[in-house]
Image 1: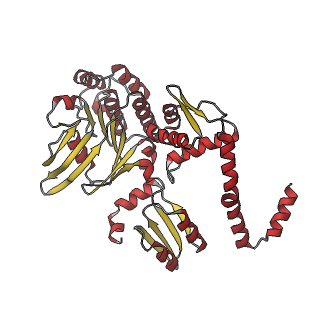
Image 2 (image 1 turned 180 degrees about the vertical axis):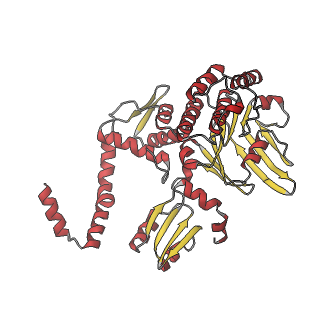
Image 3 (image 1 turned 30 degrees about the vertical axis):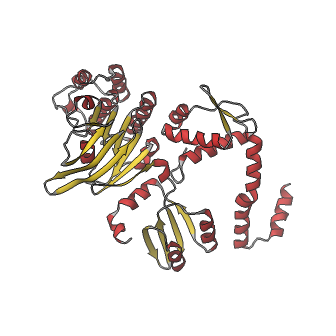
Length: 291
Length: 117
């Protein structure tokens, strides 16, 4: 179990992570979603013990993680800066990772370089943005660390590279189950890989649930304005729009089939909400004000 | 393969039921393991496992310890009976509703069905 207990991270007056409590059972793949500036990277830095929280603690299997060498050896935190020197060659970056990590799989690292068509002789400075991200993925996956954190590791990758990344992530997780936390904006293309999803908003955890529980949560109801309003009464409304006499509302939660049948007889139409739309509705401040 | 408008575990369960009804999965035939299924369809194995667990709960699949999961011998007959029960409410009622909206009478429908025989 990985636990965050009342973790707060500040930068001066700005509170990036606000009193977060989170319990993460191990050996699952988590997706961390949130808008720009919602505090994802700060949360992950605290989770990986790269940053000491201003308040609160992070416990890995009941042991305080910060400055604990045992926990740190078992933690791979890949952030977009890569924490490498620009003048290093890819090969030497992998060698260093091999010295530092007892779980490092050098053979797998070579296989991943091959899959991503990366040249191990190149210097980090000579790589494109997408290729730097690929090096991050190689360092993250081949580390086989019990806690693997990939922060926006797809940046700059094209669709083919991202597909290869997701494929390898799943294949290697199936062969070597471990805790993997992936932060991303590209919800729709990776959501199928996540067992659980954590949504952050303005430094807080807005939601932490099984990914599958979010599919089909949220429904849009469209029809004559007054009937839609009557139907929506008593439901949590995530968003609404009107055009002429027609109104469309987005409701949170699952509707009872009888309720839908009744609504349909009343001339209302119902549509399910995709994950991306649900995420947008849940984290959109402008819509929240109108709630 | 999967859409995100309903839980994937339910879509998995429905897919396997359809395979059993169509005969592409037979009685006592072994189904894919959750890991094989997860890697084939590129989904999280816990999600796949939930879909299979649902089918075991419903008696559509049965487990053999250490070997895997198999199609229950009575699954095709049971599923067919269930679907037949739902056919009128779920398949035919919407057709009749639409017919009513556009002004097609029941006589016209029976006439059409008679010509299809």
